Structure formats: structure tokens, C-alpha cells
Length: 359
Image 1 (cartoon, rainbow, N blue to C red):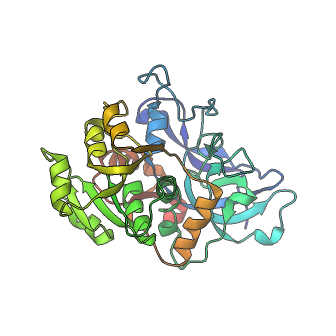
Image 2: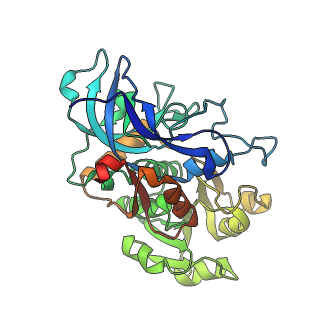
């Protein structure tokens, strides 16, 4: 196919509001460097990280309120930047050293920039932050990060997985969630939360969901064993009632905020807490006595390793997890897509498609 010189893309031009996201149709199409492929993007899922990076909402270790981007190990974000992690597309060109037979492949992008040869995430970065991502018509990336996935799912369905499910899988891996154990999931109707419900089931574990009003049936349909509606006067009692007083082995928390200490109270002795988000507030109150007297483990987690990604692909190809498309938007309607995403009135993932693909 003929590759144009320019493309449509959404550019993040700085930290701030939606006005910092600019849709343009004259962005140069990237050229694949040595060891890279160029894909024609067909779908890209939306994530909380997109919003928080735009807002500069990650703070710093000495000032939680500081405007700062995602990476603690040194900033790699420059403006303008094309965001977008959960990218699916078709290889249309290759750089030097890449087999031309790859042209035509449909691929799911492993968005992680590992910066190391092992599975350590100590220096992790990602496409859409350290280099351009998938909110565009074309994207260049290392060939090793472009993976063919053997599935009959559509491109839009495949774009619901990578960031949310990889994040969720890493959380469960760090917490060593095992078959037969119970995991309590906050924010369970969102992208990562709904992923964890399915990933827990894939491990033979039992997911218990905490969600906002009106989303209870949706998460039961995904696979939750029981549901607690957020906003209960006594969360500890509500969870105990929902599961008949059975122990909670792991808490997978994406909300934090005022409920944080209650989540530690809910955990059984020697239970494990794992988090990859804090949508209700990142600065929490912790009674250290609860942690040490109950012998608890606390794990911070973000993204995932190469091994986590391989397991995710295996789950997709063996139909152990299913896509949850909460809405589909044109790239040119990106402001509305992100506004709707921030309102959280959906279950699963919102997916953005280039206008040419939508047509």
C-alpha cells in the first residue's frame, strides 16, 4: 500500500486540561528505524495513565501535589507527544534488519520500553510517554514489541487488552494469587479492575468486586463471585456479609483514598495488598500497627514484564479472557472520548479508531 507523508494524530502539547490535546491532520508519518516496523493503526484503547500524564498528576516523592509526569526514574516525556498504549495495527513497512515478510501482519503492541534485558521493571518506560504511541494513523515501534496474536477477535476487541490486562496480571503475579484464594478488587468495573476479575478466574482464584451503584450486574457477568456496592457505611462489614465471613487473601486496589485502611483491615493475617492506581486519592492514612501486627505484605505495581505479556497472550489465544468494549470513538472526536472516559459511566475499555478506519 502507499504510505502518505502526513497523518492525523492527537498531540499532547503540555500538562493541563483537554485543551492540551490537539487533533491535527498534518503530522509527519514516522519512518521505521533499524530494527523497527511501521504499523497502520486500526484501534487504540484508552487508559487512566493517559489522563494522569496529561494532568501531570503523579506528584513527586517530596511533593505529592507537584505537577509531574509518570516516571520516577527520570522524565522522558517531551511535548508534543502522541499518547496511546493499547495499540493494534497492521505492519506496512519495516526498517533495516527486519524481515520484509512481516509486512501485512496484524499485531498487538507490547507498549513497554523495558530498558533492560531481564524482567526487572526498575527502569520501565512506555510508548505514549518515552516515545510516540497509538493515537494516530501510523506508529513506528521496535519490531520485537509487535506481536501476532492468534485469535479471531476484531482489532477493536484486541485493543482492549494490553495495558489494563498487563497491569492486572502483574499485580496478581506480585501478590502471588493462587487457585482457590479470594481477591477483593476495588474499581472493578474499570479497565484494570474488570481485567483482574477475568485474570483471577484464569488462575482459578475467586474475585470479589467493589463497584459503584448500577454496575453490580455487569461485574457479576464478567465473573465476580460477589459484589459490594461502593459507599457502604461500614466496608469491612459489607465485604464480610457478601462472602459469608470467608477470608480475603489478596486486595487488588485501584482506588485507595479514604477506603485504604479498611482494605488492610479486611485482609486476613499474612494477606497481600497490591496496587497500581489511586483514583480516589493517592495520599492515604496508614495505621502501621495493622500492617505489622497482621504480618501483611504491601506491593506497588505498574505495567508488566515480558513474561507477564507472554502469559497475557496465552490467555487471549486460549480464550480464557474476553474483550470488554465500553465504547468506540473516532480519533477526531478525542475530546469527547476522554471526557466520557473520565466520567466512568461504562464498564471495560473505551477504544479510539482513526477516522479512515471508522469509515
